[in-house]
Length: 314
Ligand code: FO1
Image 1 (cartoon, rainbow, N blue to C red):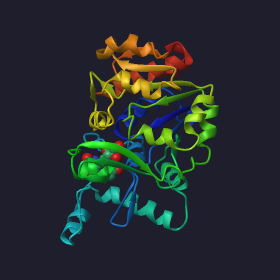
Image 2 (image 1 turned 45 degrees about the vertical axis):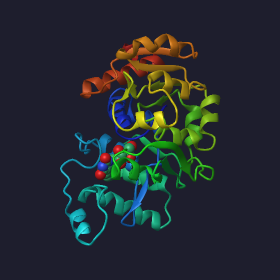
Image 3 (image 1 turned 30 degrees about the vertical axis):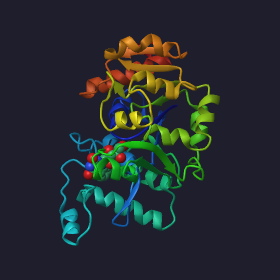
Image 4 (image 1 turned 90 degrees about the vertical axis):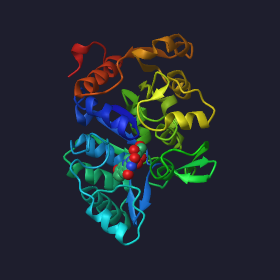
């Protein structure tokens, strides 16, 4: 079994390749829920939806989120009613949020709802939200504390970052089966996701970091930073705000207590020695996923580190 720790768009792109290299039934994806937000009375789980839509082949690939070909009639009507519409919820996407919110209100757990949607989408891969309890990523900025989506989407990541908080993390239990999956995994793959707000919350859930340290699984991460810049999203601003250097090395350092192998882009080959001095094996390859071939190749590089030669893969 291969376990992945995942955020949104970067993770989803990588996982598109992984499901073509490893049978879906052998995959468990642990997903960040710190980005979840309640809007219009609905529970939105952006990272989970991005992964489910992407693996189901219905994501809007240009944006990396939302449903391909979606319309925004409901949102336009909400605007007429005086509602805030900075978070662009499409009509088809809204169906997912209505469905999820309804089940949550009836007492189902988020992990049960996600599993239900996953099955209805015809996916065999196991998708586990990091916790069934609410955790909210809050960005401390020069204008005050903001929900992550307000910081990123509403205000365009324009405020100076002073800190990051995961509200509710102390009370959040890992979802049933999450810790066991890490302990029993053949490999744990940290997707090329934001290390602060996507992977950070997962690693902060009770028992997760300890399980990674205890597990005999090979732990592999892919750098989301290439040539000193994130491929997508505000990782640079968040890392700078926390006083971290924006580099592949800096990401490796955040994972260095549990990591065995770090995959960096060939553009960052100069960082290899410094990362290896952290006691981590470094592989450099093309990590920029422009098309399906790039995604599959990156997945093969990862699986080669677990199962050996490329010929043994699938
Ligand atoms: N990202 C945006 O930049 N603007 C949006 O209006 C937006 C809407 C949205 C709706 C549903 C959904 O599942 C995701 C959405 N995202 C949007 C993406 C999302 O906010 C972030 O990319 C993730 O939270 C980061 O992992």
